Length: 247
Image 1 (spheres, rainbow, N blue to C red):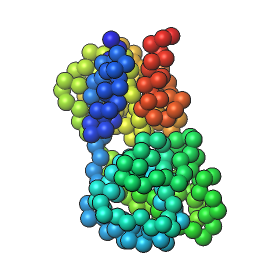
Image 2 (cartoon, rainbow, N blue to C red):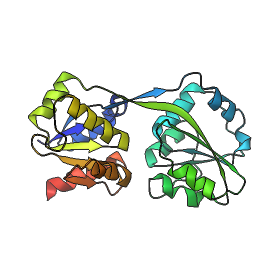
Image 3 (cartoon, rainbow, N blue to C red):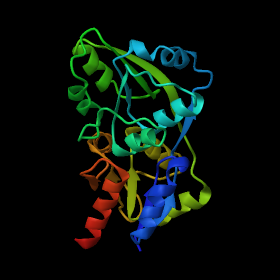
């Protein structure tokens, strides 16, 4: 049974781990990040109280959806604002809260959002995001004549896996999964802190990345033996792993 290291935050790992088990893999929880919402977020509160000033609100992660709706559960959506999301999981998180996205790009990266937003000249776009979110989307909106309003709604902080997980990594795993560039960076830092060379890990594991942005981070870190999901979701990662089992 192949051992798969699951490096995403512990709060988000259960669903993926269960799918891995069902597919005949052994998931090993190895969270390298944790999500910390911004408390008393006055900027977000003000923006949400004036949603009719925005042409679009764009959710780029499930985390952003959860923070916004957890902090403002009685939020009344203005009929004037349209909602765009990146990825089916983010869209699903909105739908469970009664909001149907107006636009979901076929490719699940920030750059694919812009064509679906229409003419943005002079129009405001609200972007509730992570503290370390990539600048590609706001820069694209700005270049299109729009006004991106970024608001940090959560931080991505380093987490420390438990001793059992570290021992599993030292013993050797078959695949290490990455679902964001920050996870790649934190994994490498944690490996080094614990006396492991991320370029020479036991068992020479495969690094499976959720999409091209994460793949780029892995390659910039000089990691070898990297594969990337064709669909940029955890289901896409699972499909890659299943395909490797067949080959």
